[in-house]
Length: 166
Image (cartoon, one colour):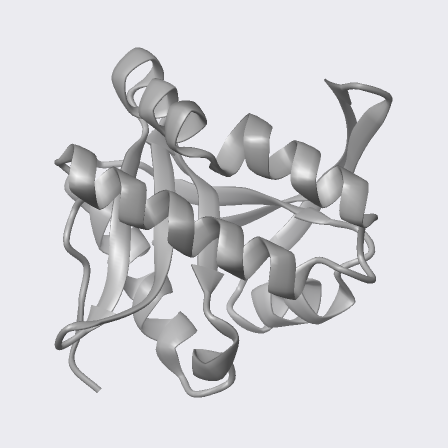
Protein backbone atom coordinates (compact mmCIF):
# COMPACT_ATOMS: atom_id res chain seq x y z
CA UNK A 1 0.00 0.00 0.00
CA UNK A 2 1.89 3.03 -1.30
CA UNK A 3 -0.30 6.02 -0.54
CA UNK A 4 0.34 9.49 -1.87
CA UNK A 5 -1.28 12.74 -0.86
CA UNK A 6 -1.23 15.17 -3.80
CA UNK A 7 -2.32 18.65 -2.77
CA UNK A 8 -5.27 20.24 -4.54
CA UNK A 9 -3.84 23.12 -6.54
CA UNK A 10 -5.81 23.45 -9.78
CA UNK A 11 -9.41 24.16 -10.67
CA UNK A 12 -9.59 20.76 -12.34
CA UNK A 13 -8.43 19.05 -9.13
CA UNK A 14 -10.90 21.07 -7.07
CA UNK A 15 -13.77 19.92 -9.32
CA UNK A 16 -12.63 16.30 -8.91
CA UNK A 17 -12.39 16.84 -5.15
CA UNK A 18 -15.96 18.18 -4.98
CA UNK A 19 -17.26 15.22 -7.03
CA UNK A 20 -15.39 12.80 -4.75
CA UNK A 21 -16.73 14.50 -1.63
CA UNK A 22 -20.32 14.48 -2.82
CA UNK A 23 -20.17 10.78 -3.68
CA UNK A 24 -18.74 9.87 -0.29
CA UNK A 25 -21.21 12.02 1.61
CA UNK A 26 -24.26 10.62 -0.21
CA UNK A 27 -23.05 7.08 0.45
CA UNK A 28 -21.80 7.42 4.04
CA UNK A 29 -24.13 9.73 5.96
CA UNK A 30 -27.65 8.31 5.39
CA UNK A 31 -28.76 6.92 8.71
CA UNK A 32 -26.56 9.37 10.61
CA UNK A 33 -28.20 12.56 9.37
CA UNK A 34 -31.20 13.14 7.10
CA UNK A 35 -30.89 13.19 3.31
CA UNK A 36 -31.96 16.84 3.39
CA UNK A 37 -29.16 17.74 5.81
CA UNK A 38 -26.67 15.78 3.71
CA UNK A 39 -27.56 17.84 0.64
CA UNK A 40 -27.46 21.06 2.64
CA UNK A 41 -24.04 20.23 4.10
CA UNK A 42 -22.65 19.22 0.70
CA UNK A 43 -23.58 22.65 -0.63
CA UNK A 44 -22.32 24.49 2.43
CA UNK A 45 -19.06 22.60 3.09
CA UNK A 46 -18.25 20.05 0.36
CA UNK A 47 -19.06 21.83 -2.92
CA UNK A 48 -16.57 23.31 -5.38
CA UNK A 49 -17.49 26.85 -4.30
CA UNK A 50 -17.35 26.08 -0.57
CA UNK A 51 -13.99 24.33 -0.71
CA UNK A 52 -12.56 26.97 -3.05
CA UNK A 53 -13.50 29.63 -0.50
CA UNK A 54 -12.04 27.56 2.35
CA UNK A 55 -8.74 27.35 0.47
CA UNK A 56 -8.50 30.92 -0.81
CA UNK A 57 -10.13 32.91 2.00
CA UNK A 58 -9.39 30.81 5.08
CA UNK A 59 -6.15 28.97 4.36
CA UNK A 60 -7.43 25.40 4.33
CA UNK A 61 -5.37 22.81 2.49
CA UNK A 62 -6.86 19.82 0.68
CA UNK A 63 -5.19 16.61 -0.40
CA UNK A 64 -6.32 13.59 -2.34
CA UNK A 65 -5.66 10.21 -0.78
CA UNK A 66 -4.31 8.25 -3.74
CA UNK A 67 -2.81 4.90 -4.55
CA UNK A 68 -1.15 5.01 -7.95
CA UNK A 69 -3.81 6.66 -10.16
CA UNK A 70 -6.78 5.78 -7.93
CA UNK A 71 -8.38 8.46 -5.77
CA UNK A 72 -9.35 6.71 -2.52
CA UNK A 73 -10.58 9.74 -0.60
CA UNK A 74 -9.50 13.16 0.62
CA UNK A 75 -8.19 15.16 3.55
CA UNK A 76 -8.87 18.79 4.46
CA UNK A 77 -6.82 20.54 7.17
CA UNK A 78 -6.48 23.97 8.70
CA UNK A 79 -3.46 25.11 10.69
CA UNK A 80 -4.35 26.86 13.91
CA UNK A 81 -2.22 28.38 16.67
CA UNK A 82 -1.14 25.14 18.39
CA UNK A 83 -3.13 22.43 16.61
CA UNK A 84 -3.92 21.09 13.17
CA UNK A 85 -7.67 20.94 12.61
CA UNK A 86 -8.60 17.84 10.63
CA UNK A 87 -11.63 19.27 8.89
CA UNK A 88 -12.18 16.38 6.52
CA UNK A 89 -10.92 12.79 6.55
CA UNK A 90 -12.90 10.66 4.15
CA UNK A 91 -12.43 7.43 2.23
CA UNK A 92 -14.62 5.90 -0.43
CA UNK A 93 -16.60 2.92 0.84
CA UNK A 94 -14.58 0.27 -0.99
CA UNK A 95 -11.36 1.43 0.71
CA UNK A 96 -12.56 1.55 4.32
CA UNK A 97 -11.35 -1.06 6.77
CA UNK A 98 -8.21 -1.79 4.76
CA UNK A 99 -5.64 0.16 6.77
CA UNK A 100 -5.65 3.33 4.68
CA UNK A 101 -6.82 5.50 7.57
CA UNK A 102 -3.57 4.82 9.45
CA UNK A 103 -1.63 6.24 6.51
CA UNK A 104 -3.93 9.26 6.34
CA UNK A 105 -3.46 9.94 10.03
CA UNK A 106 0.32 9.56 9.80
CA UNK A 107 0.32 12.09 6.95
CA UNK A 108 -1.66 14.57 9.10
CA UNK A 109 0.65 14.01 12.07
CA UNK A 110 3.64 14.77 9.85
CA UNK A 111 1.98 17.97 8.58
CA UNK A 112 1.44 19.08 12.20
CA UNK A 113 4.97 18.22 13.29
CA UNK A 114 6.43 20.15 10.31
CA UNK A 115 4.67 23.22 11.71
CA UNK A 116 5.64 22.44 15.34
CA UNK A 117 1.99 21.99 16.31
CA UNK A 118 1.28 20.05 19.50
CA UNK A 119 -1.95 18.26 18.61
CA UNK A 120 -4.52 17.23 16.04
CA UNK A 121 -8.20 17.80 16.58
CA UNK A 122 -11.42 17.10 14.75
CA UNK A 123 -15.16 17.08 15.14
CA UNK A 124 -17.23 13.95 14.66
CA UNK A 125 -21.01 13.55 14.69
CA UNK A 126 -22.08 12.07 18.03
CA UNK A 127 -24.25 9.57 16.15
CA UNK A 128 -21.28 8.29 14.16
CA UNK A 129 -20.24 5.67 16.73
CA UNK A 130 -18.02 3.70 14.35
CA UNK A 131 -15.85 6.72 13.55
CA UNK A 132 -15.70 7.69 17.24
CA UNK A 133 -14.38 4.20 18.04
CA UNK A 134 -11.80 4.39 15.24
CA UNK A 135 -10.55 7.78 16.44
CA UNK A 136 -10.32 6.53 20.03
CA UNK A 137 -8.32 3.49 18.87
CA UNK A 138 -5.92 5.91 17.13
CA UNK A 139 -5.31 7.92 20.31
CA UNK A 140 -7.95 10.64 20.10
CA UNK A 141 -9.87 11.61 23.24
CA UNK A 142 -13.13 13.52 23.49
CA UNK A 143 -12.41 16.92 25.00
CA UNK A 144 -15.91 18.40 24.73
CA UNK A 145 -19.26 18.25 22.99
CA UNK A 146 -20.49 21.02 20.75
CA UNK A 147 -23.69 21.87 18.93
CA UNK A 148 -23.14 24.30 16.05
CA UNK A 149 -25.98 25.99 14.18
CA UNK A 150 -25.13 25.71 10.48
CA UNK A 151 -28.24 27.44 9.17
CA UNK A 152 -31.51 26.39 7.55
CA UNK A 153 -32.63 24.80 10.83
CA UNK A 154 -29.71 22.32 10.91
CA UNK A 155 -27.10 21.77 13.58
CA UNK A 156 -23.92 19.78 13.81
CA UNK A 157 -24.08 17.80 17.06
CA UNK A 158 -20.46 16.75 17.52
CA UNK A 159 -17.77 15.50 19.79
CA UNK A 160 -14.55 17.49 19.60
CA UNK A 161 -11.70 14.99 19.76
CA UNK A 162 -8.00 15.65 20.16
CA UNK A 163 -4.80 13.69 19.81
CA UNK A 164 -1.70 15.07 21.51
CA UNK A 165 1.53 14.72 19.56
CA UNK A 166 4.66 13.82 21.47
